[in-house]
Every structure is written in C-alpha cells, then in structure tokens.
Image 1 (tube, rainbow, N blue to C red):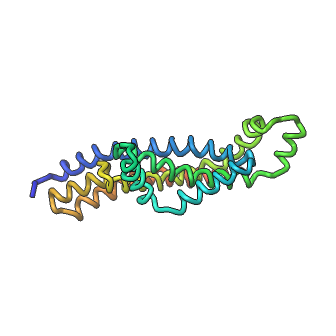
Image 2 (image 1 turned 120 degrees about the vertical axis):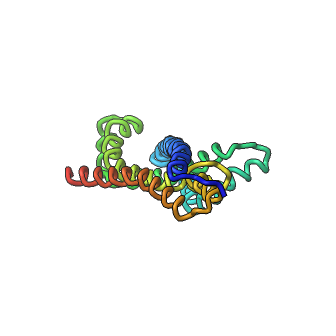
Image 3 (image 1 turned 60 degrees about the horizontal axis):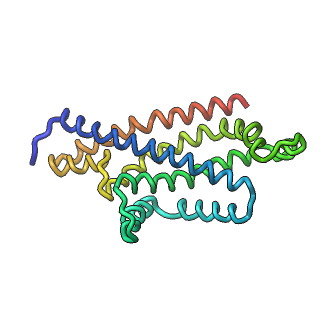
Length: 216
C-alpha cells in the first residue's frame, strides 16, 4: 500500500479532472454540430432524410452509452480502424449527445406556432431564411435551458470512458483506490468534484428556465 496524503489524492484527482472537462467540452461541441445538421435535415421534410434522422435517434437513444463506447473502441479496431481511447470516448459521447439534442431542439421548434412557417412563405422567405431570421432566434431561446441541463448528463457520461482505459476522473479515482485501499475517502473526493462540475450547470439551466418562462 502506498501512502498518499489528502493533498496528494486531491491533486491527482484534479489533474485527471481536466481530462473530464476537455472530454465533456469536445463531446458537447461535437454533439451540437451533429445535432444542428440532423435538425436541419429533419425540418427539410425530405422523406429519406427524416427516416435517417429518426433511425439515428432511436439507435443512439435506445442503446446504452457504455455499449456505444465499446463498439467505437473495440468494434472499429476489429475492422482495421485503430482508434485511441480518447477518440473513441469523444466519438461515442458525440453521437449520444447529438441524438438527445436533436430531439430537445425538435421539441422546442414544435412549440412555435405553425403559422410562422406559412407567414414566412407568404413573405417570400426560403427555408434557410425562415430558419435564420424567424425560427432559430425563438427556438434557441427556448432550447438554451434544456440543452445546458443535458450537459450534466454528458459530464457524468464521461465516467464510462474509464472502462476503455481513458484516464479521467473516475479512472484516476479507481487507480488511487487501488494504491491506497481507502475507497470511502477517494470516491468521496471524486463525488465532490463531480458535484462541483455539475451543480453550476444545473443551477444555470434552472435559472434560464425561470427567466425565459417568466418573460413569456
């Protein structure tokens, strides 16, 4: 057993926390990008694109994130595509995040009056102009709170990257536990750090929801 002081444990956990934060940011940014494309494809109402988006959402919402991570890491390697643990974790989290964001955004867009689409056509606006000037400014305002709220799930989802060997906060906690045999202390610190990462996001989401709902 290796002797670690509390300061040593916290310092090592904080070093690993930066990878949790980076992975969360990469996954959320990637998820937003993919979700924007999927949302545009869905709104375009082309049958094949709509079917593709529906299948995409069903697959990535209907399967465990852990399974998606295994398939990205081990599955791609089996067909000859070598991928690092970081890339596999970022890819699977991006796919997972985009599947939920596209549904959140679709719901927000559906809350807007249908007459706005018809009025835009009467004004001579095409599909992209209607999205840019009429629909998106209102939808973004509505979608901001639930999207930030979902980012909490992304942060917590990064913990699963430990099973494919990526050293983030949970993996670092497991390694420290193996070295110190003090699971209660180590994982209490891990839980506190996760709480410090997630609570500001939850608070911001609730604040924005109250603010925008109150202004309606």
